[in-house]
Image (cartoon, rainbow, N blue to C red; front, side, top):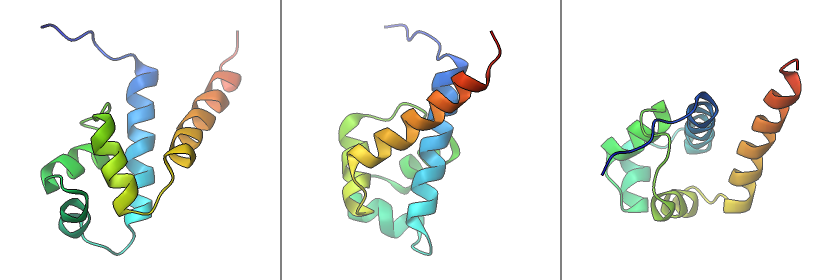
Length: 91
């Protein structure tokens, strides 16, 4: 199975998502949050750094639960940033 390359916007959305998780993690260690979510610390590191810009839904849901984040709030934050960028791009 061949994956279609991600668009620049999809990569940017993944980077924004990673920043949101990193900010929500605060002082908690990556290992602590990953363990609470039931994912590996390596998976969390890849998501936070944007190297895994499209994590699986259940990974996102588990991380959101471990960080006490609303999936709706996460989606809105990523969508809002995307809308802001599209408005900033001159036609």
